[in-house]
Length: 276
Image (cartoon, rainbow, N blue to C red):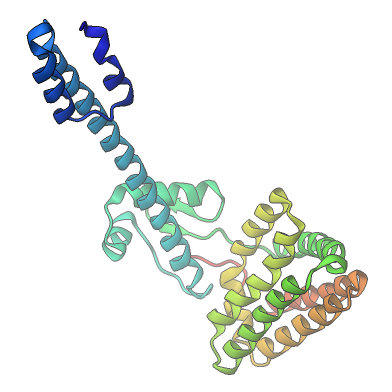
């Protein structure tokens, strides 16, 4: 036997110490490489352990960073847009029970997305929204959402229509409990459904950033008496057209719904220009 006979153990890294022990016990008297086999085995195991550790650390750090991102984003979105408060790395780390590293990375990501601004003396700030931005945003939503629902409504399957109706049912239940945040979550599910069915990633991601920007405003708008009821009724009108496969009718109902939303945002005192 020669040294090359043991190479497959190194390539597969599936060999165990027992394999090497038996191999050398059987052929050791005829081989001049028994100790080399042991060294080879331990070297392979050490390399594999280091690779596994590095891989685990990468996965762990990414998971922590993503968790921090989602929790901070949720924390900010659930605040009323008229509330003014400062958030810092230290306060967030304490509240979320995380180290400052994933917190810092999550805040940098949110800042890159244009969702927040970070100021040394003011903490985390949601950029002020102007009347011009409100008008431009809803103009974009009308153009895109009306187009998308016009395209998908005639081709929705019974299963997809059932999913739409499920979101409407959840909205109704949240409305009856006067749970604005829960209603808003299923409102988003309802609108997102049509984007998912259209399957255009660029459009979907663009609209998500726009909707996130106005989420905190939505909570104020829906706290206005009668707003949730009207929003739900408008969703039902959209859904009625979808069930008929009427793309133009669904687009027209969506236009009315978004126009109402824009007017409500502009009518709520303190909604424009929110600071967190």
